[in-house]
Structure formats: structure tokens, C-alpha cells
Amino acid sequence: MVFAFVLIAGVVLILVVAAVLFTWLGMPSVLSCLVPTAPWLVMMGTLLLSIVECLLFFGSKEDRRSAKRDLIYLVPTFAASAVLWWLLQKFFW
Image 1 (cartoon, rainbow, N blue to C red):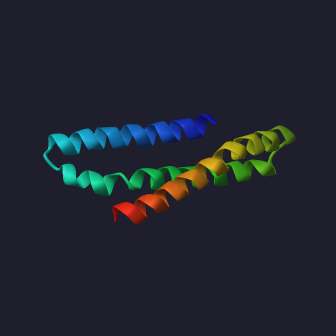
Image 2: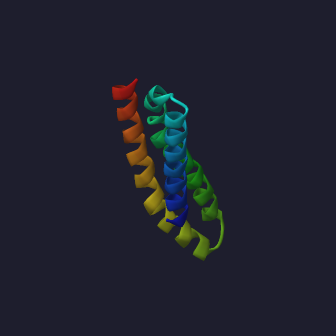
């Protein structure tokens, strides 16, 4: 759960900094291209974290328990970000 929070907070922080930077540079039209990438970044990050968690199933009993607990948070995060990415792709581009 901590990994997912760090991932989402990092993506939001990067997008806020990029939005401020592009607005400051006088390119606010780039923001419509930047916004749909946020759910994609979260989706790819959660996919990679899920793959790492699946590797924990080869470990000890405590590792398997930890992997199950983390996947309970990562799979819905992946699904929600995939739906958001699809909707943003459909309506923004």
C-alpha cells in the first residue's frame, strides 16, 4: 500500500510541476496532452509493482501473505487507472 501511495503521489507531483512549468513558459496548450499521461503512468507503475509482488509468491509464507495483501490494493488501483486512461484518451484526444 505504501508503494502505491508513493507511486500516485509521485505522478501527481510530477504533473503539478510540469503544469506549472508549461504555464510559466507560455505553453498551456501542452497541458491537454500531459493530463492523459497521468493515469497511464499510474497504470504502468502498478503493473510493474504487481509483477514484483507476484515474485514474492516464490518466497516464504510471510512473503506470500504480504504479496496477497499488497495485490489487494494494487489490482483495483491498476483497474481504476486503466479506466481513467481509457476515458481520457477517448475524450481528450
